[in-house]
Length: 487
Ligand SMILES: *[C@@H]1O[C@H](CO)[C@@H](O)[C@H](O)[C@H]1NC(C)=O
Ligand SMILES: *[C@@H]1O[C@H](CO)[C@@H](O)[C@H](O)[C@H]1NC(C)=O
Ligand SMILES: *[C@@H]1O[C@H](CO)[C@@H](O)[C@H](O)[C@H]1NC(C)=O
Ligand SMILES: *[C@@H]1O[C@H](CO)[C@@H](O)[C@H](O)[C@H]1NC(C)=O
Ligand SMILES: *[C@@H]1O[C@H](CO)[C@@H](O)[C@H](O)[C@H]1NC(C)=O
View 1: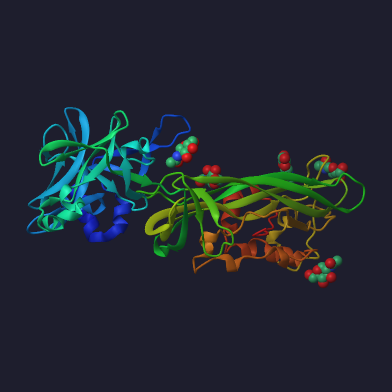
View 2: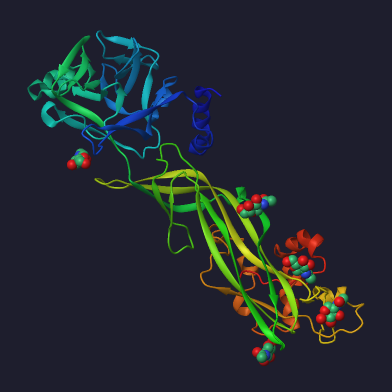
């Protein structure tokens, strides 16, 4: 897709498309001068500025302005441009020729070019300014925009507009109000421009500097509800054995630990610096998440659950914890605020895509009671159960001649900090499924068989519990499954 076609698309379909299909014009990175702790400065790649090959006047909406051109018919902005002449990159300013632009560059003679690069500030989140420069100010200002080699974008005001005595002359002056050229690092430095076809050197002028923000904030996040995609998968988190090696019928307890990766990625955006610390203010979340812009943020999160069950001496059960791991992808619109050390923050509306992966709920599965000694399943009875037998191991052991025990009552409790649960992203959706979840606190302490059935697969079918059961059916056919959701 050509640059030209893309620009038309953007024109028609507004900024949203621009983000999804960034312009594919040929671009070159821009380097700026940074203040290193060493004597000599270093160069860094600008995250917000690029040199872009000129193809179409519509590109100029993002071009960095250097002054005005005054002709009899019109006053129009001139932009910073760059051409490579005899292998040497040199900067100049654009002038209009009919509906197109040319680059008038400083080098030896006035040179007019149709093939050139324009300096673009696409994100409008990089602050750029023309900073006064004097030969004796000492060197290159921090943030100076490099053209090539040891030269930086600079300008000098035209005689006609700078001289107040010449106010009358300036009113009738035709041409650029600033001559755009370069700061050359020769000796203490000098600003070189082309004036009326001649090279001129100045000991003072203005240097283009870019100030980059040091952090961002993302606020007013609105998800595009109808374009959300959601994937779920059931993951085995932990397995353990609860056993009674004592000699009385007693409550056994064990703690099961597991971890999962909590992932968030808020997308990238043209002109927004990759890696900058960013606070994400989501609705329904008290403290903002802190990420690095345009980088995937992953946190290992650890949780513990305690499992209790009354067991007869010499018997045990196998316990498995499964997690419903959810991945959400959604396009969103939001306001991105950029903060600078020395000036006010700037905000801009952006569109990007968010992806989050989180552990939504934890479910417990357990096996029939078996003898520790020989692994044989202990026969159980259904005499006390008035509910569906499908949730009990008894269905698989009805042939056993002498049932001696009731099915075990297994309880799961959360221990310590809880990280799993519906994500804040989900909470912002009106059709949140959070309401359907059974809260831990509602599970009775002593969980009679009635409660066991209530919390079991009979009702969990409405959530992904049913899926987990189906998935596990092959291996866990004989398992008695009790689900405690959202623990
Ligand atoms: C550049 O760095 C030096 C030493 O780190 C510091 O003293 C100076 O203030 C810095 N200048 C600017 C403009 O940041
Ligand atoms: C399920 O999620 C886990 C956790 O990220 C992942 O490691 C695993 O590959 C996923 N499985 C499938 C089938 O997507
Ligand atoms: C319990 O788990 C062990 C492996 O840890 C397995 O060999 C055994 O068959 C399981 N018992 C039952 C009743 O599922
Ligand atoms: C397994 O061990 C238990 C307890 O010692 C015993 O009651 C049971 O009969 C044994 N089952 C088999 C099949 O050996
Ligand atoms: C067990 O729970 C039932 C209600 O489900 C309650 O009536 C009973 O008192 C409880 N027993 C104990 C020991 O907590």
